[in-house]
Amino acid sequence: MAFQGERGAYSEDAIRLKFGEVDVLPCPTISDVFKAVESGRAEYGVVPIENSLEGSVNETYDQLLETELRIRGEIKLRIRHCLIGNPGAELSDIRFVYSHPQALAQCRGSIERLGLKALAYYDTAGSVKMVKERGLMDSAAIASKKAAEIYGMKVLVEGIEDSETNYTRFLILHREDAPRSGRDKTSLIFSVRHVPGALYEALEVFAKRGINLTKIESRPVKKTPWEYNFYVDIEGHREDEEIREAIGELALKALFVKVLGSYERGD
Amino acid sequence: MAFQGERGAYSEDAIRLKFGEVDVLPCPTISDVFKAVESGRAEYGVVPIENSLEGSVNETYDQLLETELRIRGEIKLRIRHCLIGNPGAELSDIRFVYSHPQALAQCRGSIERLGLKALAYYDTAGSVKMVKERGLMDSAAIASKKAAEIYGMKVLVEGIEDSETNYTRFLILHREDAPRSGRDKTSLIFSVRHVPGALYEALEVFAKRGINLTKIESRPVKKTPWEYNFYVDIEGHREDEEIREAIGELALKALFVKVLGSYERGD
Image (cartoon, rainbow over all chains, first blue to last red; front, side, top):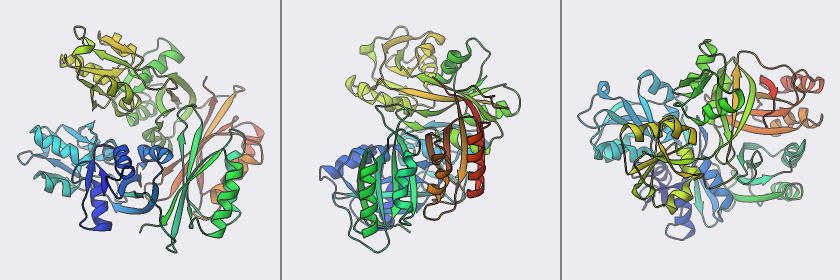
């Protein structure tokens, strides 16, 4: 199972929560996770799609547009961030804090209160490894308690996130999506012409059938500034009759529709 | 006029483009820009809201929910990134490149072609200042040409971004919003109950009046995982009769509505 980041990343926690002790393949970037599954080097990939405080993970959304992989499932993980330093460091020594920009954003208030300077790093667990390897005594990293254990580092503050309600939702990627489970979601991407009411007309295909929309996200069309693709999650399976009808009708109204997969909702 | 970043940041370029030679107040974070205008230390603030390749700037969206400031205008700036080194450095000396993760992402192809290693830094202009202050001869920064001038540094490559269509849209913040200009936009935030068709019903207030939606963005409600506030930009001024009627009707359907301001569209 491929994931982005170093050993001890939250994505690895998500894999352990759902699948227990399986073989894992750490990858430098989210794009590398998609490539690992596409090429068959990994059977599955697990990538973050959304955090309950910071919102969507843009790189995952953008990769979903390009890939031929399917969404096979989702995992929701409670995130508890720790401020982690070298074994000899005290909180009063720390002036800089390294982590992934999303983790820094989730701890923005605490970082300001502690008077620390936030420095972006490509990965949470990777920032722990870097602070260790460089022996930085004025710097700490934000990552999971598990990451502190893996690298033999010291937890200076446990639960440094600004909000208790910090969850990350991960997608499970595979070459094929899932059969009906009875409690399914379907994810798809579409775009509409740039005229008044076009998005409203598109959403009508779900509203008139009483299909619940659990998420809508817009992402820029890279070649055309200020135009957008819409990503929606709806309740139901692609083989349900009303979902098939709704998607069929949407395909006639939209400029394009891409179904990403149907899968069991996470708890 | 307050902006986020060091002198030479793209936000300062946006200020110069719109207002010319005015006094500026550099601020460490986007939240500090809002505070500077709220407290009266600055008359106006200029903050990035959206990039045409990378999408929305989450911190700005989240601050808009909390602030009592109004959106007074917008500025669209073409982003041209430069690779910037110390005056004695040559392109063939450079092995490492520092910049804000968004800027590095926008130059990913060029960085790979040049065989450089990308290192994340908190700010574009700040990375130029750091390469100068540390006297690094094997490292360069990615920032604006203006940043190179301000810090007396050398432009090694001009236009290093991968795509020609790289624009950032900035908002102008002020304690009061603007009178009608004849080519206005209105920005607002609302939320709806979590039932099928609720977003569709809300958008009906605009669609049935032929009001064009130029942007819709969803941001998580931080206290309640997997619920969202919607941010929309519509064409028209809050004092136009049809816009007033639409917002009045939305206020009856939605859980809350917050009008952020009406302002002239940027070019």
